[in-house]
Image (cartoon, rainbow, N blue to C red; front, side, top):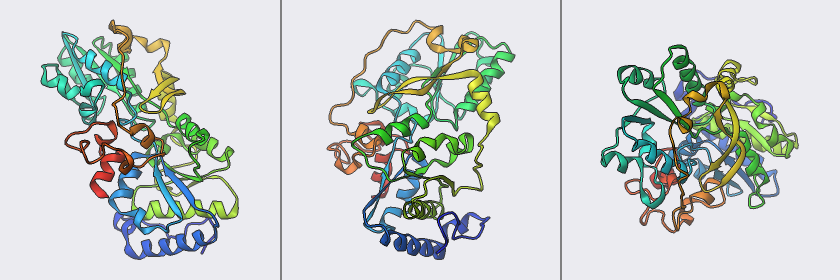
Length: 373
């Protein structure tokens, strides 16, 4: 086997190659060989919801030796949106002469007392699903008598596009559009996971899409803490090679941020996207559902763009929120529990009747476990 800095695979071009059974067998053999050289069990966390979904879909946990434990982290933006933010969104959608817009997954996320944007829509609120914030530009132009509110959720992958839309609206002098931002960034959450005494993570499969924007610098805290980090793609061969590379770092005791997903990610990331993002927004503390407040993990408007801040445009009361009794989403998002350890899972909490946020999104850990385990 090659050293951990080298891929054991030749460059591939077609998607089928990343699902090739022979390549998978080769990687499984390599993983087993490396696992045998490590005397202790190894815990690896994927912090991306798309990775969680792919690991479940392709049965990757079942392919690994017993000494390797894969756990899921808080990589689903819908799942980590706090109950208070959901309650606030429901309040905003009830304001007269407004059109409230958001991504489809947000409609079913429960706030307090099992309320949701979906139930608010059923009660008559004008709530519309959009595929991107850019859809709101024409919506605002075609509904000049109404205020268009966009609920901005997502990590570094989504937030630059929202910042770009705000800059466009500013240039076009669109006055009836605002953003309720609950956007978050990943590095502070990873640092929180590293510092959590209840966790003992040896390596991280770092998110591929987020890393296209951030580059490798976002994961410096992982290396400083003496853990391994590999930025990984989303196909079976990608994920298995990422695990293989993490084991190589552990064996060599050389910690670094490696890029397995080289076909999409560069070390420097997308500087232009970051420039647009931080021209409009700055970091601030943010509450992650089931986890709590994480310093500098949220995005709020800079002074120059506060006219587009929904929370400053409308009088919004301080809305209380209670977490759902019996729901283990907080521990699941931190990788402390798996869904089967939640007393609600598959009993009363199902994709058709989601009690907690991790069961709503296709990238949610509970939803993935329900479908594939």
